Length: 226
Image 1 (cartoon, rainbow, N blue to C red):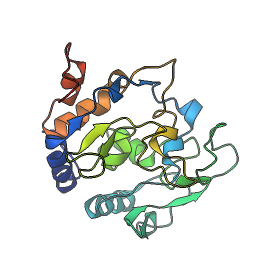
Image 2: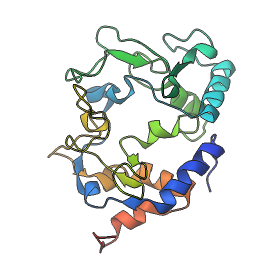
Image 3: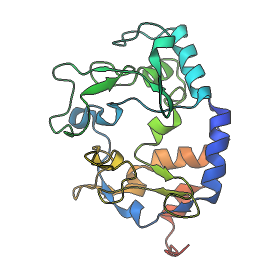
């Protein structure tokens, strides 16, 4: 198993992945790879909900020194409490920071770890130290747009999938959804099958969770009814 900064959080995730149904049909959805010039980190507009383990690690990374991040005051200020737990803090977006087609239902905010070009300071720090680019990033961040629907929400088993505008689990009232509304999470006729576009994410997820998800999705024959 690869090195991770969040062993306790990964252990919880691994147990869910072990019993999850892989939504093969959804992974045939055509997606385009992440293009920062096009999306400008739209998926990071609201920060991300994190575990206590992730929060403590991130505070430590900030204390260790992050250069050039807008809106960072101190290690405690980068994490905020919410009614769902805790998440990375946000700041108001400045002129030119948002994508031209930024979803109207998304608040015009940015995760405090984004620089003015939309790149993640946590990832930049890891790369500057010649470490795995995702070593310091919360699991949900680098997994995006993979969605793990918990057991009981859709089915008795957890479901690993790519969501769409109709089944996006974040869709509610006037909020049209989250993953299905981001550039790398919404279907695009000019794209390629999601399992190919998200090869790195699927292989990383499989490595830390002990299940070869990418091999399952790239198999020549698939049992659609597993």
